[in-house]
Structures are given as C-alpha cells and as structure tokens.
Length: 111
Image 1: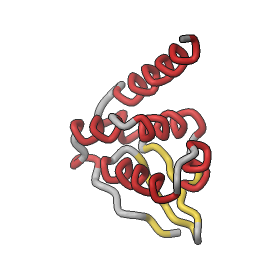
Image 2: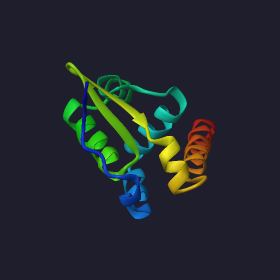
Image 3: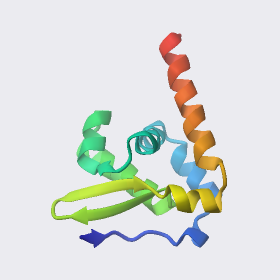
C-alpha cells in the first residue's frame, strides 16, 4: 500500500479547508465520506456522475487542503476523512459543515 503526500495537520490552514469546501462537488464528497466512511476514488466519481479527471482534480484538492487521507492499493485509491485530526485542530468545524450541507440538501428536496 502506498500513501500519497498529505500536509501535516499543524500546517493545515482554516482558509484552505474552507476554500476546498466552497465547491459543491467537494462538499458532497466530504458529506459522503462523513456518512459512509472510506471509499474508492472511482466509486466517488461514479456516484457523483463526474468524469474521472474532474474527480481526480477535486480529490487532490481535498487531500492537499488536509481534509482527506488518500492511500493507493494496487490500482485502487481509497479516500477517508481525517476526522479525528480535523476535530483536534478545528473543534466542531467538520460536524457543523456536514450538518449544514445535509440541511441544505433536505431543504432543496422540499423546494
């Protein structure tokens, strides 16, 4: 198993986390990872209905911002949230963002 480069959590800046989450696709990826746990990059792209290169761009942005952890096992890449580390660095942030995103989704379904 090969680990991809990730920023040290002490180097992760709130502005970069929020910038990464400002894109609706990346926000949806984080919500899905928070809900479903670790999954493959291919499945995330497929579930979101986006092209492989687009998914790769978004997932790299999430990794470089410090939000997700990526590892490669053969031809598969796995993604998971860095939940514990993020909660230590920015207490309550991830829960607040995921909760707000879910509320927006429910409100949009009722509109």
